[in-house]
Image (cartoon, rainbow, N blue to C red):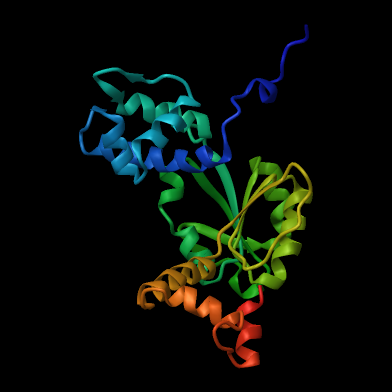
Length: 247
């Protein structure tokens, strides 16, 4: 029988669990910094903002790291999760688009403390070239390929306006970047094998606005609005019905 590749032998961890591992890692880091050596699943779940049953199920995908009657060794579990998600090594990152958001990302200290090193800041605007942000000099976007090659960059961050994001993504992929964090308000098309995570702050605010609106509605208000939109028991003006029913 042929030897299995590392990809084939890797644990098959559900995406929902993968999304929560960094939250557990952050909670464990906080517990460790406060001097906590061991914690129960209930303590860790409370620190992470999830229920303990979900946490135990998530951690079961990684192996058995808890001790009955004792709980989890905080530093050991923190290392195991960090190793599982790959932040025990140094990941070089390039940020493209050094406007207000790009500046904020470049100055974010959490990158370095969590295993990510910003090796280059790139922008197509010549007026930004040679500007220094967080100790890194802004360079022309045309330097992308050389920077990716020289630094072994696999992760790129896009903080450009929406109209430029796809072109930037295409250049990143062609240069060898295989993971992209996209802050631009646009949907990227990338080939198979390239992972994209989208962060849209306006969508998050709209979700909060939805919940705030529901808080202010009287009991049954949502059902009444839905009934009106369907023409029962009355009818809304046509333009309002059309607007409310569009997706």
